[in-house]
Image 1: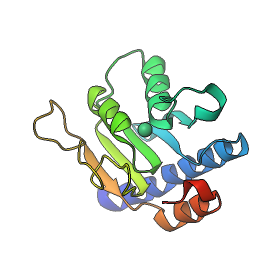
Image 2: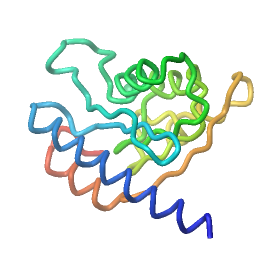
Image 3: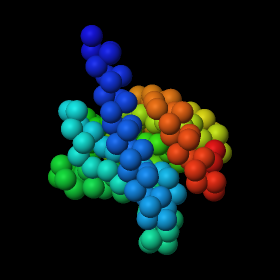
Length: 155
Ligand SMILES: [Zn+2]
């Protein structure tokens, strides 16, 4: 019954990502967040911090990857699954490939910038040195409702 357990955990950790995104909104950021999970334990989480830092690379996925790697004490995270509210951009998927992350689970596809299958498919590009599993649509309706509450974030 591993499959059913996995689906339950996807829902659980995506709920955490959505909660983290709401914390970002409360800080005046866009509602984009990420959670890093290893062995069913959440080891890092963060939201976009572009507004607070004026750093165009302060995306939730990058911040979460940095925090996870620092916590584990390694530059590669082959056991990690990353949960995101929105399909990550090319920069973030590139970082997931560099970090050798095992899997990406996202809620809402992003046809304008998504690089895990919508606009581009970098997560499973055969010419790159690493490919990761991609699951989409987890808690999508809930995440879309959250995005709709922040008009500039709607996709
Ligand atoms: Zn990004």
